[in-house]
Amino acid sequence: MNLNLPKKPKTNVKSVIIYTISIITCIIAIIIVGFSIYYGSDELDRLITIGGSTITQEEEDYQALISNFENIFQNQLEEYETDITIEKIDKEQEIVYTYYTKNENKKNSYDMNLNIPYINIDNEMIAKYNEEIKETYEKKAEKILQTENKNTIYSLQYEATIEDDILSLVIRTSLKEGSNAQRLIIQTFNYDLKNHKEITLEEMIYQKQLNLDEIQNKIDKEIETEYRRVEDLKSLGYEIFERNPEDEMYQIKNTQEFFIKDGNIYIIYAYGNEHFTSEMDLVIV
Image 1 (cartoon, helix red, strand yellow):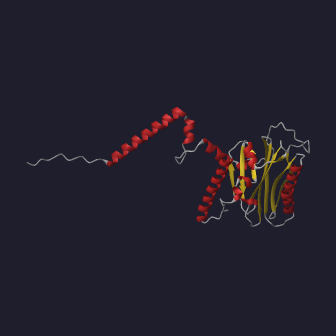
Image 2 (cartoon, rainbow, N blue to C red):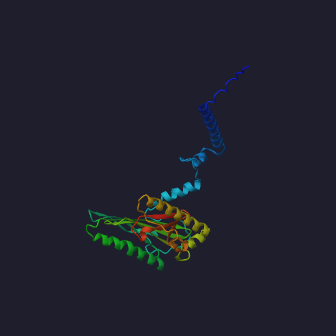
Image 3 (cartoon, helix red, strand yellow):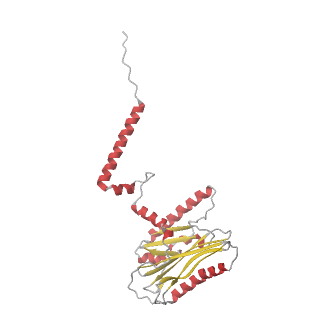
Protein backbone atom coordinates (compact mmCIF):
# COMPACT_ATOMS: atom_id res chain seq x y z
CA MET A 1 0.00 0.00 0.00
CA ASN A 2 1.36 3.38 -0.95
CA LEU A 3 1.16 5.87 1.87
CA ASN A 4 1.25 9.49 0.78
CA LEU A 5 2.48 11.74 3.61
CA PRO A 6 1.52 15.40 3.56
CA LYS A 7 4.24 17.63 2.21
CA LYS A 8 6.08 19.80 4.76
CA PRO A 9 5.17 23.40 4.16
CA LYS A 10 8.04 25.58 2.92
CA THR A 11 9.42 28.10 5.37
CA ASN A 12 8.86 31.67 4.28
CA VAL A 13 12.39 33.04 4.87
CA LYS A 14 11.35 36.60 4.08
CA SER A 15 8.65 36.53 6.74
CA VAL A 16 11.05 35.12 9.32
CA ILE A 17 13.54 37.93 8.65
CA ILE A 18 10.84 40.57 8.92
CA TYR A 19 9.50 39.12 12.17
CA THR A 20 13.02 38.88 13.64
CA ILE A 21 13.84 42.48 12.77
CA SER A 22 10.52 43.60 14.25
CA ILE A 23 11.19 41.76 17.51
CA ILE A 24 14.74 43.18 17.78
CA THR A 25 13.44 46.68 17.03
CA CYS A 26 10.82 46.35 19.76
CA ILE A 27 13.42 45.18 22.27
CA ILE A 28 15.71 48.12 21.43
CA ALA A 29 12.78 50.53 21.71
CA ILE A 30 11.85 49.12 25.13
CA ILE A 31 15.47 49.47 26.31
CA ILE A 32 15.68 53.08 25.07
CA VAL A 33 12.38 54.04 26.69
CA GLY A 34 13.41 52.38 29.94
CA PHE A 35 16.81 54.09 29.90
CA SER A 36 15.19 57.44 29.19
CA ILE A 37 12.69 57.04 32.04
CA TYR A 38 15.34 55.91 34.53
CA TYR A 39 18.24 58.25 33.60
CA GLY A 40 16.47 61.08 31.78
CA SER A 41 16.43 62.18 28.15
CA ASP A 42 19.49 64.45 28.51
CA GLU A 43 21.66 61.52 29.51
CA LEU A 44 20.30 59.51 26.61
CA ASP A 45 21.06 62.29 24.13
CA ARG A 46 24.56 62.58 25.52
CA LEU A 47 25.32 58.93 24.98
CA ILE A 48 23.82 58.48 21.51
CA THR A 49 25.91 59.84 18.62
CA ILE A 50 25.42 59.82 14.85
CA GLY A 51 27.78 56.93 14.35
CA GLY A 52 26.21 54.87 17.08
CA SER A 53 29.27 55.18 19.31
CA THR A 54 29.27 56.75 22.76
CA ILE A 55 31.39 59.48 24.24
CA THR A 56 31.44 60.78 27.78
CA GLN A 57 30.51 64.27 28.88
CA GLU A 58 34.16 64.78 29.82
CA GLU A 59 35.25 63.97 26.27
CA GLU A 60 32.61 66.31 24.85
CA ASP A 61 33.80 69.14 27.11
CA TYR A 62 37.42 68.48 26.15
CA GLN A 63 36.69 68.64 22.43
CA ALA A 64 34.74 71.85 22.99
CA LEU A 65 37.78 73.44 24.67
CA ILE A 66 40.02 72.36 21.79
CA SER A 67 37.60 73.71 19.18
CA ASN A 68 37.23 77.02 21.01
CA PHE A 69 40.96 77.70 21.33
CA GLU A 70 41.13 80.33 18.58
CA ASN A 71 38.24 82.25 20.16
CA ILE A 72 39.87 82.86 23.55
CA PHE A 73 42.11 85.67 22.32
CA GLN A 74 40.33 88.88 23.35
CA ASN A 75 43.34 91.21 23.74
CA GLN A 76 42.74 91.78 27.42
CA LEU A 77 43.29 90.55 30.95
CA GLU A 78 40.33 88.53 32.15
CA GLU A 79 38.64 89.35 35.43
CA TYR A 80 40.60 87.93 38.35
CA GLU A 81 40.81 87.69 42.13
CA THR A 82 44.03 87.90 44.13
CA ASP A 83 45.07 89.10 47.59
CA ILE A 84 48.56 89.96 46.39
CA THR A 85 49.54 93.61 46.16
CA ILE A 86 50.89 94.22 42.66
CA GLU A 87 53.11 97.23 42.07
CA LYS A 88 52.10 98.76 38.74
CA ILE A 89 54.32 100.91 36.56
CA ASP A 90 51.35 102.88 35.25
CA LYS A 91 48.72 103.23 37.97
CA GLU A 92 46.03 104.14 35.41
CA GLN A 93 46.41 100.97 33.33
CA GLU A 94 45.46 97.34 33.91
CA ILE A 95 48.08 94.76 34.88
CA VAL A 96 48.13 93.66 31.23
CA TYR A 97 47.00 96.02 28.49
CA THR A 98 47.45 96.69 24.77
CA TYR A 99 50.24 99.23 24.32
CA TYR A 100 50.82 98.93 20.56
CA THR A 101 48.00 98.71 18.03
CA LYS A 102 48.47 98.61 14.29
CA ASN A 103 45.74 97.99 11.74
CA GLU A 104 47.10 98.95 8.34
CA ASN A 105 46.84 97.70 4.80
CA LYS A 106 48.92 98.55 1.76
CA LYS A 107 48.05 96.77 -1.48
CA ASN A 108 50.61 94.12 -2.52
CA SER A 109 52.86 95.10 0.40
CA TYR A 110 51.31 94.26 3.77
CA ASP A 111 48.15 93.67 5.74
CA MET A 112 48.62 94.07 9.50
CA ASN A 113 46.27 93.70 12.45
CA LEU A 114 48.24 93.83 15.69
CA ASN A 115 47.42 94.16 19.37
CA ILE A 116 50.71 93.86 21.25
CA PRO A 117 50.48 93.50 25.05
CA TYR A 118 52.43 95.10 27.87
CA ILE A 119 52.74 93.67 31.38
CA ASN A 120 52.26 96.57 33.76
CA ILE A 121 54.27 95.28 36.74
CA ASP A 122 57.36 96.92 38.23
CA ASN A 123 59.64 93.91 38.34
CA GLU A 124 63.00 92.96 36.81
CA MET A 125 61.77 89.66 35.31
CA ILE A 126 58.64 91.32 33.91
CA ALA A 127 60.84 94.03 32.38
CA LYS A 128 62.69 91.29 30.48
CA TYR A 129 59.37 89.88 29.27
CA ASN A 130 58.29 93.29 27.98
CA GLU A 131 61.60 93.86 26.24
CA GLU A 132 61.37 90.46 24.56
CA ILE A 133 57.82 91.19 23.40
CA LYS A 134 58.88 94.55 21.99
CA GLU A 135 61.97 93.17 20.25
CA THR A 136 60.05 90.26 18.75
CA TYR A 137 56.76 91.77 17.65
CA GLU A 138 56.94 95.57 17.51
CA LYS A 139 60.25 95.58 15.64
CA LYS A 140 58.86 93.01 13.19
CA ALA A 141 55.92 95.32 12.52
CA GLU A 142 58.14 98.34 11.97
CA LYS A 143 60.30 96.35 9.59
CA ILE A 144 57.27 95.20 7.58
CA LEU A 145 56.07 98.79 7.29
CA GLN A 146 59.29 99.60 5.43
CA THR A 147 58.78 96.88 2.80
CA GLU A 148 57.27 97.15 -0.66
CA ASN A 149 55.53 94.44 -2.72
CA LYS A 150 56.28 91.65 -0.24
CA ASN A 151 52.66 90.55 0.26
CA THR A 152 53.07 90.13 4.02
CA ILE A 153 50.13 89.23 6.25
CA TYR A 154 50.82 89.78 9.94
CA SER A 155 48.32 89.50 12.78
CA LEU A 156 48.72 89.25 16.55
CA GLN A 157 46.28 88.65 19.39
CA TYR A 158 46.74 87.85 23.05
CA GLU A 159 44.93 86.69 26.15
CA ALA A 160 45.97 87.14 29.79
CA THR A 161 44.72 85.56 33.01
CA ILE A 162 45.52 85.59 36.71
CA GLU A 163 44.57 82.35 38.44
CA ASP A 164 45.99 80.82 41.62
CA ASP A 165 48.26 83.90 41.83
CA ILE A 166 49.87 83.01 38.50
CA LEU A 167 49.89 85.52 35.68
CA SER A 168 49.63 83.80 32.29
CA LEU A 169 50.02 85.64 29.01
CA VAL A 170 49.66 83.86 25.66
CA ILE A 171 50.44 85.60 22.35
CA ARG A 172 49.17 84.16 19.07
CA THR A 173 50.77 85.40 15.85
CA SER A 174 49.94 84.54 12.25
CA LEU A 175 52.62 85.47 9.73
CA LYS A 176 52.76 84.91 5.98
CA GLU A 177 55.55 86.48 3.97
CA GLY A 178 55.42 86.30 0.18
CA SER A 179 55.36 82.76 -1.18
CA ASN A 180 56.42 81.22 2.13
CA ALA A 181 53.97 79.01 3.97
CA GLN A 182 51.94 80.68 6.72
CA ARG A 183 53.38 80.38 10.23
CA LEU A 184 51.39 80.12 13.44
CA ILE A 185 53.61 81.34 16.27
CA ILE A 186 52.57 81.03 19.91
CA GLN A 187 54.56 82.37 22.85
CA THR A 188 53.59 82.25 26.51
CA PHE A 189 54.78 83.90 29.72
CA ASN A 190 53.94 82.51 33.16
CA TYR A 191 54.85 84.41 36.30
CA ASP A 192 54.29 83.45 39.95
CA LEU A 193 53.05 86.69 41.54
CA LYS A 194 53.38 85.36 45.08
CA ASN A 195 56.96 84.08 44.83
CA HIS A 196 58.10 86.66 42.26
CA LYS A 197 59.53 84.21 39.78
CA GLU A 198 58.92 82.54 36.47
CA ILE A 199 57.01 79.27 36.83
CA THR A 200 57.64 76.12 34.79
CA LEU A 201 55.02 73.69 33.52
CA GLU A 202 56.23 71.06 35.98
CA GLU A 203 55.85 73.49 38.88
CA MET A 204 52.38 74.49 37.74
CA ILE A 205 51.33 70.84 37.57
CA TYR A 206 52.58 70.22 41.11
CA GLN A 207 50.93 73.40 42.36
CA LYS A 208 47.57 72.22 41.00
CA GLN A 209 48.21 68.81 42.62
CA LEU A 210 47.97 66.93 39.33
CA ASN A 211 49.72 63.67 38.50
CA LEU A 212 52.83 64.31 36.42
CA ASP A 213 52.96 60.81 34.91
CA GLU A 214 49.31 60.88 33.90
CA ILE A 215 49.75 64.18 32.12
CA GLN A 216 52.90 62.98 30.37
CA ASN A 217 51.00 59.89 29.20
CA LYS A 218 48.21 62.11 27.89
CA ILE A 219 50.70 64.23 25.94
CA ASP A 220 52.37 61.13 24.51
CA LYS A 221 49.02 59.68 23.47
CA GLU A 222 47.89 62.92 21.77
CA ILE A 223 51.16 63.29 19.85
CA GLU A 224 51.09 59.64 18.79
CA THR A 225 47.52 60.08 17.52
CA GLU A 226 48.51 63.16 15.50
CA TYR A 227 51.59 61.37 14.19
CA ARG A 228 49.44 58.54 12.85
CA ARG A 229 46.94 60.99 11.34
CA VAL A 230 49.73 62.82 9.51
CA GLU A 231 51.21 59.55 8.26
CA ASP A 232 47.82 58.54 6.87
CA LEU A 233 47.45 61.89 5.09
CA LYS A 234 50.98 61.64 3.73
CA SER A 235 50.12 58.28 2.18
CA LEU A 236 47.32 60.06 0.31
CA GLY A 237 49.73 62.63 -1.07
CA TYR A 238 49.21 65.50 1.38
CA GLU A 239 52.16 67.50 2.67
CA ILE A 240 51.77 68.12 6.40
CA PHE A 241 54.34 68.93 9.06
CA GLU A 242 55.68 65.66 10.46
CA ARG A 243 55.81 64.92 14.17
CA ASN A 244 58.39 62.75 15.84
CA PRO A 245 56.78 61.20 18.94
CA GLU A 246 60.26 60.35 20.25
CA ASP A 247 61.37 63.99 20.26
CA GLU A 248 62.29 65.19 23.75
CA MET A 249 60.42 68.45 23.11
CA TYR A 250 57.28 66.61 24.24
CA GLN A 251 58.70 65.93 27.69
CA ILE A 252 57.05 68.08 30.35
CA LYS A 253 60.41 69.31 31.60
CA ASN A 254 61.21 70.61 28.10
CA THR A 255 57.80 72.09 27.26
CA GLN A 256 58.01 75.87 26.99
CA GLU A 257 54.59 77.06 25.82
CA PHE A 258 51.68 76.68 28.26
CA PHE A 259 49.21 78.83 30.15
CA ILE A 260 46.35 78.56 32.62
CA LYS A 261 42.74 79.52 31.93
CA ASP A 262 39.51 78.65 33.75
CA GLY A 263 41.37 76.13 35.89
CA ASN A 264 42.77 74.27 32.88
CA ILE A 265 46.39 74.09 31.77
CA TYR A 266 46.80 74.54 28.02
CA ILE A 267 49.96 72.81 26.75
CA ILE A 268 50.98 73.97 23.28
CA TYR A 269 53.35 72.64 20.64
CA ALA A 270 53.34 75.30 17.92
CA TYR A 271 55.64 74.10 15.16
CA GLY A 272 55.46 77.48 13.42
CA ASN A 273 57.69 78.87 16.17
CA GLU A 274 60.63 77.28 14.37
CA HIS A 275 59.28 76.22 10.97
CA PHE A 276 57.16 77.52 8.11
CA THR A 277 53.92 75.85 9.14
CA SER A 278 50.65 76.64 10.88
CA GLU A 279 50.44 73.15 12.41
CA MET A 280 50.19 72.88 16.19
CA ASP A 281 49.18 70.37 18.82
CA LEU A 282 47.19 71.31 21.88
CA VAL A 283 46.76 69.27 25.06
CA ILE A 284 44.49 70.53 27.85
CA VAL A 285 44.62 69.15 31.40
